[in-house]
Image (tube, rainbow, N blue to C red; front, top):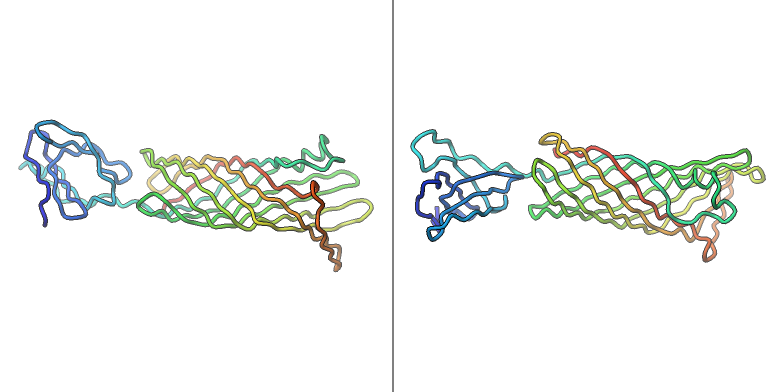
Length: 267
């Protein structure tokens, strides 16, 4: 094993840290957080406190330089690269409503709803991750002569950055572009039952804080913003279908903010 830096023994230098390149460091390990080893060492007669990320650590042995209570070399706990999440919560559409419905309780019913989100990511040692997310938002409003039952779904690949903060807690920030669909199962007194459908390229931004409950489980709290505009709509009534282009200013805006509470699994 190569010996690039074996520092002189001093009172607190009781432990051995071996790097992924095979170099040995005489030090005092103070803590290990999310695989990152925090330690002190003697450099030019001064005690220096520093750290080493998990990808650069091979093994460590506490008490290596003492004759009592020697322990076998231990591998640094491997970071769990996979994250699987499920969450739900309140969602609110932020785009304007049709002028004929603006300010009514009917319109408020269509703006406020709930969502469910399923997601999965794989994180590299750099704490950058890639994954996939599916989100579905639902809102419904009805009166004696009208009914709208709206579902807005998003599916797309994601790019995430994870910032561990100790005690199995992490802050995650992600973004995605993907397929955004709109479906309204509607009814009106004059037209009866019919369905409106549309789709577009959508975008999603997400911020989540995972609070560690155990080594494999975390409580996730966060918010996300989804955006997109439907410019073409298909009207289905029975076997009949008609696709129309929406005029400028009358497009169906899908801008929405979601608050979410869920569980994150680190298998």
